Amino acid sequence: MRVTDRTVERNYLYSVNHAESKLAKLQDMVTTGMNYSKPQDDPIGVERSIALRHHIAINQQYLRNADRALAWMSQVEQALGDINQIINRAQDLAIQGETATTPDDARAYIAMEIHQLRDEVMSIAQRTMEGKSLLIGTMPVWKVGPGLTVTVNDLTGLLNQLADDLLTLENGLSASDVSQIRAGRAALEVAADAVLSQRAENGARINRLEMLNGKMTSLDIEYKKLLSSSEDVDLSELLVRLQSAEAAYQAALAVGARLIQPTLLDYLK
Image (tube, rainbow, N blue to C red; front, side, top):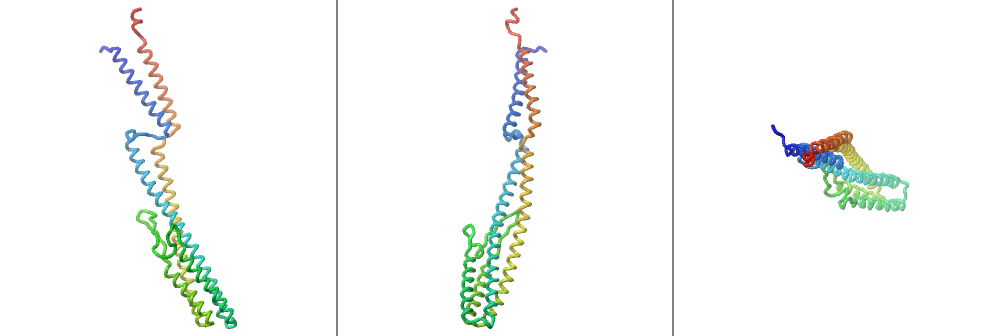
């Protein structure tokens, strides 16, 4: 079989172009730090990356929802703590007013402080967060996982009842009615138990969310590790491959220079 100069030239150019293309691809990988720049470079890897990025986006949204829920519940806990202090103070005042040796004018002063405590309860009931009522009305619902939602309790009934109990105590003190004062103090004991129950329930939700938050954070880290293994190059390995490709390209150029060296002048000699 006769091998013409054109055949040699064509084969040489094909080899050089192939080596140059391989070298350019490796250089692009070093520059971008990714295993592929176009979907056709690795269709399976691209599909896997898209799926992982989708899972990361969903998981991060769950994390944001959980953080918002935790912030809300922390404010609820603060409000319940303030209410508990009000009840404790009102109980102390009720005991003073219930004492038979307490004069009527002293009871009147105690009634004035109970009135202020009742106003404070109503003020707490009006607290807001993110433009929404914190304790009363329709509470927000947060989706913190696949099919998993959390919310907080509407405390309208508890706060209204507490305000009524404080009003009963205030009226009893103003009228120096010991039986009514006792009734108000007894009602405050019930209210204290109700607040304690709400704090326990809210605390359980906070603990659950913190555990869930930790799991989702770990999952987010694992997803990102998988994404990195799919997309990111092994730089040390890639540099070795790049050096090898550069050597192959230079060798191809050197061989081509020797193959195509004869010219018309060489034949005329």
